[in-house]
Length: 283
Image 1 (cartoon, rainbow, N blue to C red):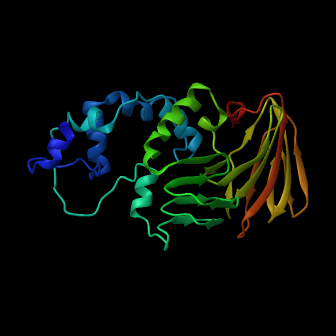
Image 2 (image 1 turned 90 degrees about the vertical axis):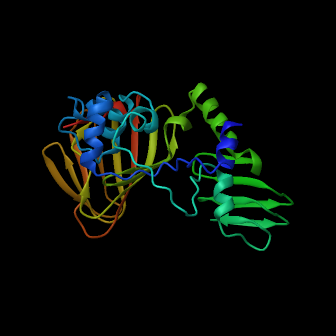
Image 3 (image 1 turned 90 degrees about the horizontal axis):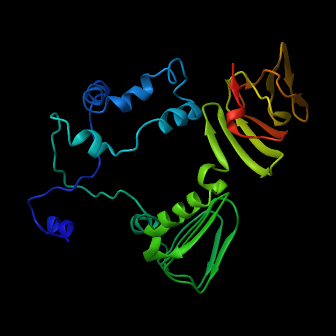
């Protein structure tokens, strides 16, 4: 009721969470008002780390106290100015809001990817890979990704957070890990996994490489599908071409890179009793 009253009044502006400041100003205000947050990036954990590496960012981020930027900083800062603007704006906080701002077909549908529909109206259907078909449905949201399928009523898309809480409570793998993860060197897509092995497609961008590392609890096999791989295995450095392979035993320092101008695609088979990311020792 309070929010509705504010909206009806002309005495308030709506916080669109669009903030503009120099990096220097942000750092000064964090140091003044929430030094414990800034300390996470200045700690021994962060010292000397590559902050473009998602694994390093995740470790640092998890050490930061949970709070919103509004409460933690903006409500305390004396350097904030509010600028009213007249513009189209949406925070796109739900699938329904994405549907509302998207261009629709003759049946009022928003469809992306590998989708075939019949007698379907006023629905949003997204497919990242698999063929998604629909017959005789209305006002639905259907979203297919590599690791999950969402089907919900158009008016209930805000309830996705309830599903997330369920995934978290049940400690589901999907809550913590994505099938495809981006890395500074490219991407890794898991295509098959169980307790003792994981099979991934590694795509390494031209002139990029992984960090030198080793694992104590798993071995790895690499097979080149496309491109040319530069492999460091212990003190040995080798070049692998298409359909050639390399074996990395447990405990051996190794690095995989792409020194060529073309993309590199690898099938990686990890095998061992433990496959967690905390078995990565960067050297």
